Figure 1 (spheres, rainbow, N blue to C red):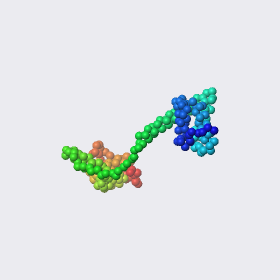
Figure 2 (figure 1 turned 90 degrees about the horizontal axis):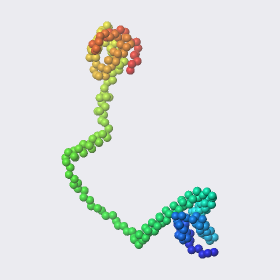
Figure 3 (figure 1 turned 60 degrees about the horizontal axis):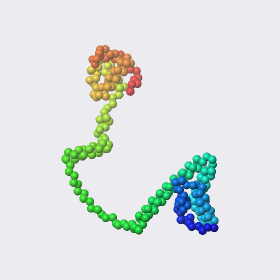
Figure 4 (figure 1 turned 30 degrees about the horizontal axis):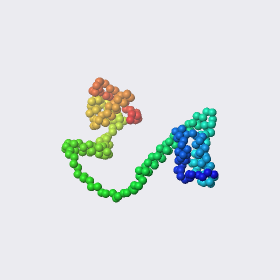
Length: 242
């Protein structure tokens, strides 16, 4: 058996071995003769097996890959095999470029030791040297305060008028209108709205008069806000208005 001039542990992986074989046998990496490369690679694997050396699984996987490409290339129509060969070529070219860059970087850093030193305190001058117009500072302050106030929750006093405002029920106001017109008393609408004590009360009076006129419990004579109202009948039960 011929003496083996290289060892498996020299190579970092199957790509490294393939690149070695291409360089050793002066093959064209841009147009790899797949049949010749398969023979060289499998021969190397067989020699390693004959020496009972441990072979990493990725080297065997590459051997199976090369044999698969070779078998497809033997077919009359071998477009798939050609595509796989081009993919392998691209991977080898990329690997060769990375290896070359790593070697160049290793040469540049060879002989240099990395040294560090403790961090030093840097004295910084914190004196504010900019000059601002007073109105500019005032505007900046107002913008900041405006944003701050918008972020604060509203005060309770804001809701106090809503909480304390009395809501007048239309049903209750209907009873009030009927009571004011009972006993044969006649009233104009202007006289009746003068009894309202709030805007809500005024709206309730208006709606109560409309509801009583619609149900026929009061009669309305005249026009505009000076019409006269008479009670015809008292509503029976509660009017379902609210």
